Amino acid sequence: MKYDLIVFGGGTSGVAAAYIASKNGLRTLLVEKTDTLGGAITQGLVIPSMKTDTQNINTDFFNDLMIYADKYSSRHKYIDGNEAWFNPELLKIVLDDMLNSVNCNVLFNSQPISINYNDNTCIFETNINHKLLSIYVETNYIVDATAEGEIFKLLNCNFQKNSETFQTPTLRFMMSGVNITKFADWLEKFDQDRNVTTIDRASSQIHLSTAYTWDTNKAWALRPIFQRGVCDEVLEYEDTAYFQVFTIPSMPETLAFNCPRVILDDEDNILDPFVYSRALFQARKRIFRLANFCKKYFTGFENSFISHIADTFGIRESNRVKCKYTVTKDDIINPKKFDNIAFAGDYPIDIHSNKNNKDKLEFVKKTYFVPIEALISEKYDNLYAVGRIISSEFEAQAALRTQMSCFSMGEAAAKDIYNKLTSQDKKQ
Image (cartoon, rainbow, N blue to C red; front, side, top):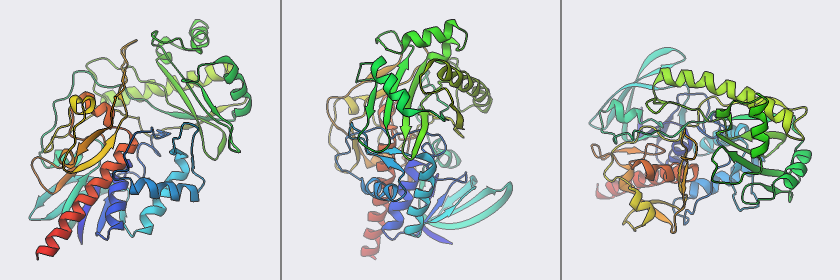
């Protein structure tokens, strides 16, 4: 088998890279370790996608995604202008349809075990349904969209030095059987802060969002209710670290929860399999307590129940690779232009801490830009990195890790590869 490129990882950045490459006529193979495309959105229930100023740079995938999402009634445009409130279950079908429409080859349930990458050939072993198989594939380029830089590891590439402080992960969940109308009416009166609680009644389905954290530097309207939950021993104090809910398109009685946070010790690394496993135990207990809390204290939750628990953590920061350029905090705060821009954004530096009053949300004054060199390995010119592993400093990555930026990263890598291959063909 011979491909122009192989994309490892079918999450937000990987599907964008594979789709755009295939749409431009490149022979593309997408290798995904699970049975589902979409990564954080579909498996991690990380919805909605947060807004950022893309400057319309490398947004072809996102624009096509909106068209396909509307076809399956799987997204909503919120009152704040955010077009990417997705239904994570339906988006599984949307992404399948998109990749099939451009004839992209997809290999599910497959994960590289080892790679020999020389002379434009790629030989990798893959674990398919618990059977180890060797696959020989010729390829000109590889895109690592594995979220942890697995291909960079296998090829002995360099990584950024990890910060001593890691961002806390979240295991998201959903509750169904919620009377959204009753909850919206109660919530709208209870919390008058429209920077926190917003309600969209413009469409046939009511949509809303609200939040609370244990940080004391903000007068959260929901604080006394969470305090009561702790006093009544319905919640543990750590359960109150972060709470955020969103409605979901085409799920009129279901809410998506951006919580609970997993409270780790400073020295714990979520990428350690033992830490990860302990964290899952902790998170699912917190989900049960939070669900009972909602049923007891929130109007409209009387007949509600846990309907979904994410298949994987929402991990905000982990391995970051070393590429030809490393994005710094100064690049975010004091933006500069580059010759070959991969993507743009204005999402703030958003750091979730495991300690009270240590969260950081530093807004930027201008749109920042990221060069394509931040996606190309310093060791191999034909190896790209996209997604949260982007070559960046810790604080810079906290602004770049959002789904909208990941969509554009994948697209930028695919287009850069296309341009290089086209240029080579012209020379020949």
